[in-house]
Length: 127
Image: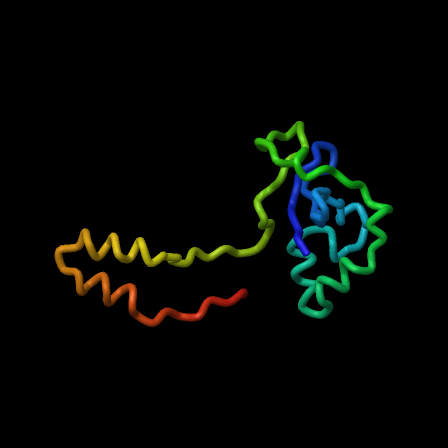
């Protein structure tokens, strides 16, 4: 299941279900759990997302071609939004092997970088 957030000039931020190149406006269902991504994530603590979305009659929802939403953001045209609304975002150091190798090659004291890259990292989790 692919979800997205998108903007409609007359309605603001919406939650959408992407299927076969189309975006179904889940927010238009007036289901409180689908009012926003944050509401859906909160509801998913008690009910699986597949059950919340699966109970909808998609043919009754407004639908938009995904390609029509893939455009530069502007308040007067429909467009995709970042995949977050009210969730807290924590940055995490995501580093790839090639980056490690490059830093080691650049470093005068190679062992410092090796120790950093090989060190244990705390497990990340959703808050």
